Image 1: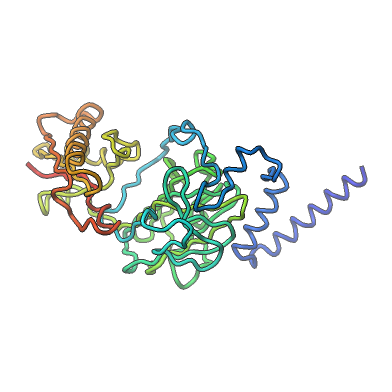
Image 2 (image 1 turned 30 degrees about the horizontal axis):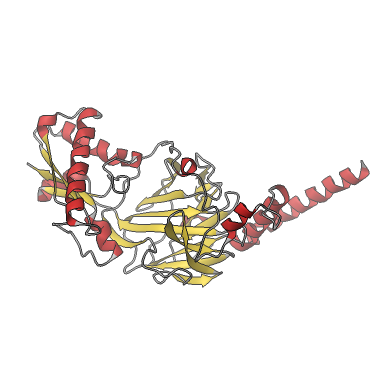
Length: 380
């Protein structure tokens, strides 16, 4: 009994000391304390695990941890809660690391600390880190007033990674987006809808001036009306990791926010949208496309005279014939969704696919290919 009381008193003293020193701690200090806390309560992987588990800890350039995750886990449906994210139209930076060599440091990022390399995992490539560290994403220009950030991240859920958008003060919580078990910016944080510990989670950030919204998968976790994220020509990411708990970063897309769809159509007679997304190689519309589709339906309701041609476009990856067929199917799928789900009059819509014949940008860069994978709305 006395020994138990002593442990309780010691724990209380440690908590009090931590609270007094909290303001002085760096992000690495906080993450290391979180790591120690997790290791006390969560069993870590040891050398006594079964042979099948051993394969999961192979070097990054070969097999990756948890690579045998079931298809059911990877394809579990994502709940969408208060989801209103619309990706920017003009791509500033994009990479999925497919052009990097396995085992090398990522060529288009700037590793600043930690052990970082390109790895194959879940059938695609990632930046993989096995120690605490920092990486910078260099941009060709300063971030605009309206921008969006998207990336896939895998990390231990009890830890937090941080994204910094301002060069002057990377300790200011209102210039930092936190991702993890608690996600958001400044005092505007909440828990994501699903615990994705060691599983892929999609982080999305939408910024308009001082207004910032943060999303994890289908849930908006922060709605911050007055924050200052900064507008540097780099984005810094501080991440937690060790050999048993690697950090993965993949499929990065940073873009400038566009105008409202109707404003663009009124000005030029057409508008490209990147907010309608499909499963790979399919015409199945993904759930995160709903905000853009609802905006199109609302625009048609507000302007009853408006009629639209829906055009499907692809990049040049794959055969021209396959791209042509896919673009036609996707344009038709958008029309069908607007008519059958959102109640738009079918007589006001038409669809056509152009495959890769009308690129909006060069297909020689990841940014260009992102720009070319699009749906365009043309006034008829």
